Image (cartoon, rainbow, N blue to C red):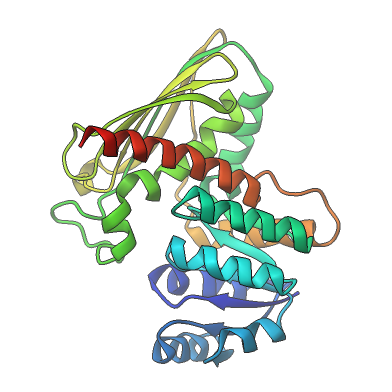
Length: 296
């Protein structure tokens, strides 16, 4: 499959470009970015072409991978889908429900495949654990803590200068990761409660799930580096179980996401993490954001 990359920032540099360049089932055709100089540097590093015009890249590929801020991603995803291009997207799908719905509608109308890269869902140990727990029942409650040190004192994250992360915070950056684990196990969220009493961008959510369980989420990008990390714990009739830890970087997981896109584009069933699932995550985040805004 001929694929292009939209985006030239840190995530495109450390994850997308090496994943696409090293994937045996993909022909990495080129890179487009809002900064032409950065696109040229990234393309040269991976032996491909830099495009100055996004429509020229779309004309040369069958699919695009997107590593751009959510609002930019949503608009370009619609554009690419309407051009008949399959989509390997990042989370969150979009910063608003309306923009997310536009992506889903474009995907459905064009009949293209879509995969949203929720990192944990493409790590073998994590996905196996999620599948195993989803097959069970009797879950009573769950606790998810997704704590990053992007804005914490002493951190050196390459994403610290990301304008959209500073605007939207942990709710929209790491919240999708937590939801991507909890929803397939406990069911959709029927009700959402939200509070932000923590330091920095720290927020707390409580979800009532269709499976009968409740979950609590603590999300932050302001944690001290020594306190950063992700944990998900389930409790129920079967006892207590935790999401397995992994030290795998994003590149192998992103290659598996590309595998999923190839399978879906080849006539396979839509992947569970398609644009429609990305939209549901966006709807939950938007509901929580509205609750937090009302309390300000």
